[in-house]
Length: 216
Length: 216
DNA sequence: CAGTCACATGACTGATTGGTCATATTATAT
DNA sequence: ATATAATATGACCAATCAGTCATGTGACTG
Image (cartoon, rainbow over all chains, first blue to last red; front, side, top):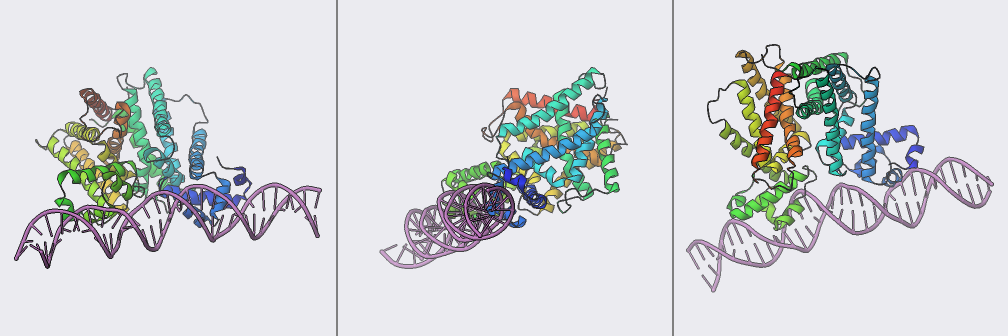
């Protein structure tokens, strides 16, 4: 975790450092991301960065925390209401949040994506445990849906969950492919209404397919 | 492409170099993969490697070729028969090939996966074009299915194709998660019959879900 | 034997890396 | 104004990187 000195920093300077670090880790994986380039772009001395963070992994885990906390905030906002929704409404809300996150914070999304798919210094177990945790969340959701009769009882919950997670995690790529949103767009740059409706149509179609299948 | 000298090499030496390079590029992305480590592990001088390949990207693209050619060979074997199968049989065959490839050549699969998801020195356009090409293949397959009445006409072919590709490309991870197959398993190590049947059940379930949906 | 050619070698280069630390600057407190 | 503590700095270090090249080796040819 960052040292106290990092919190004592003036807001704009701290934010600038974070921005530069996010830029770097969004474009390169952990091993290739360069501390030297981060401090150069942020306009601070390398020694300074090492007064804010213990080492490279410290900075990296700080960014991963930023990713999950930002996402968690959006989740909390979306699920503020009754937590017992019909299954497919829950699914819709989940997809909606993931898509919005991807649109609003494409760089943070990229960091998170790299962390789960590529290489990172964290114990590998910890990472796949994270992915398994996501799958497990869907498994319980699906089993609830089975209990309420919304989902066919012969569905293998784990495999269905795996499909959902795959579609979710890859949807970001598809979104940016379709909307042309890319790294040149700054984080927090509000997406246009046209993009939003396109995205909404996208994940509604996805859910429809997962719900009813494609067979005639 | 590799120089002629590489082809002139004695078979075992050439294979040893390929194996070590595959090892390295399967574990690290392009930027992090180390030529020094490859030659050290292969027991050759660094200068020698540069008599076989022009530079790092030359070696890398050679490996990517190896990946796609290996996969293409398996595809050709599976689709030797009549090329106009019912849609869901084609889908089954596709999934089957992808799963077998993942099982038989986990390292090659990992290299290919990194190439599409992570960073590589190739023009980025070329890579996402590759992914889009895969999607396009599914799009035509789906449109054929629509024409024959196998698939509902209101399905958005592109979105459905995206879901298939996502499931396909992530299935490797799921397979290794379920079967415990990992980097410690050598390429070409034949998977056990138990693993094979487990895998078969997996992608049959996946196709069933994509075909009929999960709704009751 | 001499000459030629293909390949093998590893010391070397210049660049870059994560990380350190003595020193300089600034802010706070007395 | 002086002392003390907090922060800023960049030259520096050892390690590593991709890539080069003069030299060496061995096999084939005349």
